[in-house]
Length: 420
Image 1 (spheres, rainbow, N blue to C red):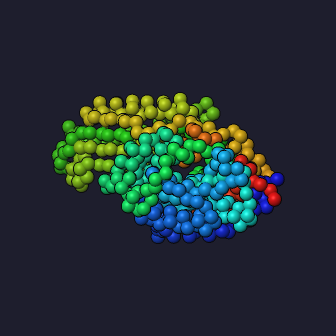
Image 2: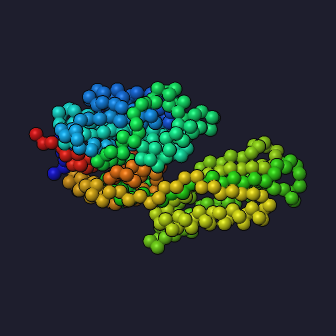
């Protein structure tokens, strides 16, 4: 029997809320620009606050801006069960990445309120600050600081590309709270619904994904330094930083495809940022900086990818008489999700008659950081073509509803839904 079978969970109400939130920071091609600590982020937070308070949830905000809504349980001494994700987006993001998980959690709270139902343990709904890392890097700052992985003071001092300071922007938009972020470490469990951001579920005809673990990730910052030259100067003897960077950028893809593990899984490699100096049309660049994002399910193969990148850089630097530095920027180890919660999600899908499959996440989520300290699990909803971080990102109302139902049943079974 599904824990939430008799609750008035409404897929239609969830979808309506998703569309209303999507109007904040709406872009011409259907996506959203609601980056962390912008005015649009503040507006989205205020809308969520209003919705939460309408169903009696008590809101606290910590020093990093994490929003925590609490619904008391019959036994307030029990560690709370949290549901959450994030409202911030990429500059050209979609309507569903992160937002689905927050608003599905809200829908569970609405259904409980409407039914007058209770849980044994308290329930929390969390909107984590700056999951995306688009404006302020690295990503998952709110959850990372809560779990003691990222230093709070360091996060508050981070600057975006224009020099704005994280802590100052948090105060400017009105979301710098006073609660201690570490208080959220005392959870009994954490559950997160998210779009897959890949094509596996859609291609296989599955309704939901049961996320068993997260792949390891390593990010690097690469700097190539040569010397500027006039665009009309002879090619011989130039120390063009961009021409040296170009084969290394190409090598990122080559390395990822070559990093095949014993089970046949290749790595993943991305160059998402590239800065060319001085940026003049008729000057060969003297300095180039670019980001490298590498991921793999096998930590040994991921380590090899990083070493191979450094070796390729050294060879290119020697051949072109430039300096290349490959500096580690951020790392996330392979992270398993809690086996009991994973099974609970499988059981919830089966009880609803939904087609589910086990799947890893190759993408960082707040749940990956939370899982280092708290029993955690993720549920995936299919995503058309696996397109995400893109205005074309889309899912169906049926996929959203299936994810909502599985999330609700697993969360309420964990919190102990009281049956009348």
